[in-house]
Length: 327
Image (tube, rainbow, N blue to C red; front, side, top):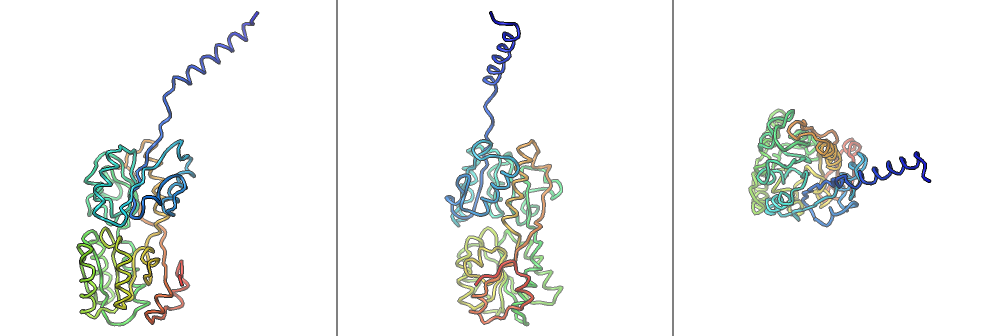
C-alpha cells in the first residue's frame, strides 16, 4: 500500500514534469553582423575574423552560449560598397533581434529600418549622419560607439614626424567624412601646416586624386577612410607606393596591405564593447536610451619595410611608441 508521503511526492513530481512541458521554448536571439570583408570569415561560433571572434568571446564572457542563447546571421560586402543597401535590407527581412555593423554600413541600415536595434561598431559622425540625436541620448534605434574624429589631429602630427618639411599634406576624404576633414583642417591651421584637400566621391576618383596630389607637389598623404575609401585599401596603398607618398591611414588594414603607417581606434576593442550593448538590449534596454561611447584604445602600426623603400628614417621615439612594428 502506498504511503501518504510517497503519494504526495509522486504528485509533486508529476506537476513539475507537466509544468516544464508547458513552458515556452527558450528564445534564441539572432544577431545580424554586417562586415566589409568576406562572409565566410564571420560564420559560426569560431569565426576566422579576429574582430567577430572577439565580439563572440565578449558575449561568452557575459554568459551567452552560441547556439543555445543566440546565433549570428553574418553578411559581408566583399569590399563592394554598392552591396550595403541590399545586405541591410536582407537582415531586416530576416527580422533579426539586433544588428552590429561598422561605420560605412550604417547609412544603409538607417534607410532599411527604424525599429530593429542597431549597435554601431565605430560610426564616423553619428550626429551629422542623422543616426542619433545626441551622444548622450541617441533617441532612436541606433547606439554603440562613435569614432567622432578623436584622432585626426594626432594622425596628422604622426605623419609630420615621419615626413617633416614645408611641403603640403594631401588629404583624401569622402563625403561621409566631412566633419573629420574640418577637424583636420583646423589642426593644420593651428600648427601652420599646408593641406591639399581632395574629395573622392567614388572609387573611380582615386587615381585622379593621386594625380592632383602629385601636381600640387604634396609631400605626404593622409587618408580619411570611410564608406568609399576603406574597401579600396589595396589600390590606394599601391598608388601611394608608385607616387612615393608617405601616407598615414586610420585602420591597420592599410598597413597590412603594404601601407606605411596607421593610427586609429582599436577595432577589436570596439567590437568587444559592442557586445556589452547587445547584452543590455537583450535585457530590455532601448537603444535610444543607451549613450554612445567614444573609443578608449588606439593603435599605432608602422611598416618599416615601406619606410625603407621610401627612404624614410622613422624617429626612434616614434618606434618605441608604436603598438606594432611590421617588417
